[in-house]
Length: 451
Image (cartoon, rainbow, N blue to C red; front, side):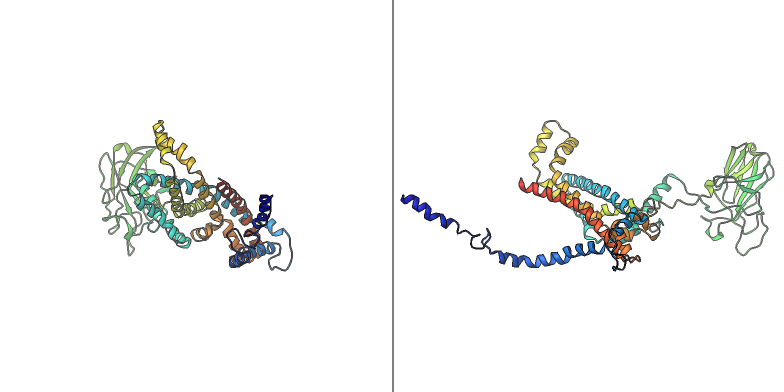
């Protein structure tokens, strides 16, 4: 009986816990915890909740904000060609950029573990993260410059191209009006008359400033007649100060060296020669009775590289700059996850006969799956908000082709459009696109905590 009374007497004492006294499990009163959380809640409400609510409300009104239009602004999003292009480009960004950055970061993280200078490599790859989007945009606007003398990308491309394909010496050169040479397709010029041995042929050209003839050209010389051979001269039929007779080799006119001359009969080349230092050339007797042709290879414009910022390539070019910036971020996170991988599992796979590719694909990647998902989801949210790179890198002529939702939001609201209703609707659309990704991320975090 006494024991029972003791238990009964002790029971009320158990109810006197921290919660019964208005305290949390950490023995902190609720109002004290709320007081400490109040500044954060105020900032959260002012910087997140209020802007979202106001954007939703503003998206239901017209441009001036006076007339309620309901969901008309959302309908305008899908009726405007520029906005639809922005939606498609945003989808391309979300599908391509995060996957490439994550894959590249994974490769870098795995490879840097196998080299002694891995730390230095990680530092170099991560350094672009210290550069602002504005600075990176300016850098890559210069990298993609069309002029090979200014743009690094085209300087490399043109160097490789010119290594395997020789450039023409006289781009832009052409026959003077009224001469015997006529256009014959492919940029070439062919004489109307045929040539004969013993009668020198004259092939005058214009279109090249005398002071810009390549090399160190000497004076042109009228070719001498040679029995059994076809001779001729290719020269610049113009001299500084004027004077002379058109179609004839005059003193002071410059020779065009290295011009290829072909003898064509029945559509086939029967002989060819190249003009010398004085502009003269000599063809064998087989050229007699043929027309002379100057192939288009003599006059093609120099290769000027790739139009990186043209309508076709502007989006891939900007995505490449984004990859350059964020590959270091992915590499660092994945390398941190890789450091926690149990090396015994990798060694066990190798002992069982797996090669390095199989170890990477079947062991390393599955073990890094949680980290890869974190990086991928973070980058997907990030690319939906990309604005700076597109706005700075894309020139005005191709900005519509590179447009994304964040840029369209700015252009519709502040970039001359002045339509805050449509701009708010685009902002709400961006929020709706981000929410599913955030939900997936939150569910993943909850599952990890339960483990």
